[in-house]
Length: 266
Image 1 (cartoon, rainbow, N blue to C red):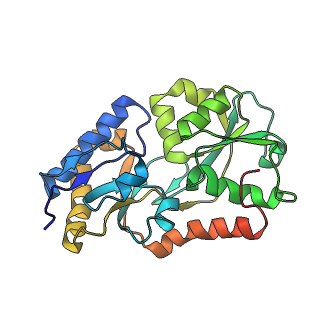
Image 2: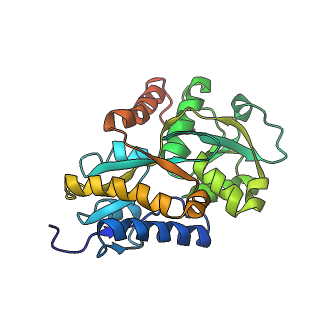
Image 3: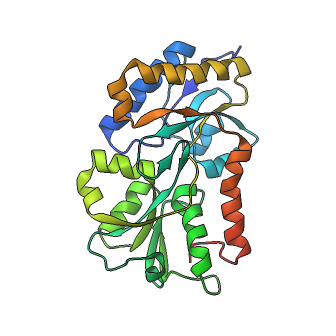
């Protein structure tokens, strides 16, 4: 048994305060089934610190950190299946978006423009976009400039405000923005989808016993069925159990871009 109470947090899709409260309520129901003493915590000290906690019972990360720095630190619990355009079961794509009245029609039209991305360790905001652009790059370059924003919402705002011309937005985030922040959604338009890859996984510390992982998987489904209207608000349809071999596709996309001579968004 863990000598201190387990902790949990779902930091990834909180695009509005009310949606964050809904996620927190659903997480509380999951924990009540598995470990009522577990605490829901904030990620004030940073996501990387949260994901590395030995007492982490349940959280969500991006597939890129999972396949890189977290590979030997956490274990997979499940991958959510979302009801959102661009999702196919536990797999998702990113929407390539530009400002609503832009003349850009295809990715190739963005040569020499400004690209916004959330961060370099993001699969949906950086890795899949790099892979999409790589065949178009010349001498390792395609864009005129790039802007690191820190989040998908900030990237959307940069595009909406014309500080950037293009961004790749996780399709689940994009669906929640349409639900929760329609004005921002209407300020941009989509031109293409990126290649699909495994969605954002739910993870646990490797200190969590195997039987507790099984209990978590059961509790995820139980909390989902508990309130169907909440599941619809969260766009949750169910959960899949993927392996690290499935997530290796993310590394494959990275390697293909790098091997073609396009290692960064430039």
